[in-house]
Amino acid sequence: MNIIGIGYLGFESSKIEEWRDYGTKVMGFQLGDSPATDTESLYFKMDDRRHRIAIHPGTIDRISYIGWEARNRLDFIAAVETFKKNDIEITVGDEELCEKRGVKELIRFRDPVGYQHELFYAQKWTPRSFYPGRPHGGFICDDRGTGHVVLMMPEPSPELENFLVNIMGFVWYGWGAGKGRTGFWRSKLNHQTSHDIAYGVAPGKMGIQHVGLFVQSVRDVGETYDIVRQRELPLMMTLGQHTQDPHMSFYHFNPSGFAFETITELEPWQGDPFELNPEKMSTWGHEIVGPIVGPSVQSPGSLYPEFFKTT
Image 1 (cartoon, rainbow, N blue to C red):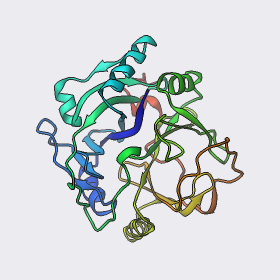
Image 2: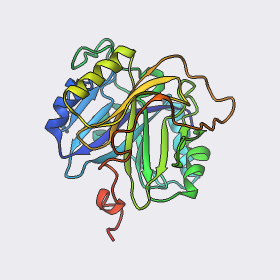
Image 3: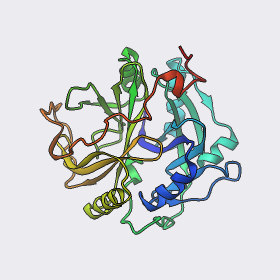
Image 4: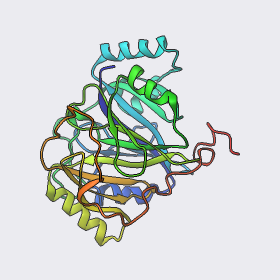
């Protein structure tokens, strides 16, 4: 499949008003216009697209969907045929849902773990329309997507790799450093970052662990770091540089209990001519000062009771 990357992310939260302030004043997102049929939700802009992150009212804080962007209509049609040939159940988005997402067409499907995904093409955009919620140099999205997402699963899934590689067309990158077994994949068209999505194992639990967002400069990382410290928001990891990527970042927890990793590129990603096997996670910094898995990771039945039976 010719997928660019993550086009948008949707979450449910019981803390809408906290997100309204946090999204603009801490992260620097722009609060965009909500669709007429979804006025209670928050739609955050990170660039000139209609939105990149949506926060929907809910009683459980959780990730609702991951929206993958097909390159164009023909690639979208080809992807739909691939799902059908592989007997993957899909739901076609109606006009109202497409309007909410601001796209031409979309389909919905679940991965073997149970997470909800969407595939779309042609999201609405307006040139020079992004105005950050606070002084900020801006986010890097454009032809690489919104960023990356790390999800947890209750146990290893033999079907997952086949789904990601042979159906979605993703490229395997490798395992993360440390004791965990977190696998990293990226879309076929992504030649700029090591991964778009990763899955780790949290025995008996699932949920989102963190979202990585790229910003324009070291200053954007530093100013966000200062605001997080001034507001005494909980940190997961301090400033540091990963071994696998020549990027500087830090991790902190947002109102929904998962982390945002704020990232800047110190130099372009080196690609993957061979599979790396780092002995440690970071070359400097990234002191772990909080939990690696936050309250956003729970038992499947409590997080998605409509999909998993509570035992």
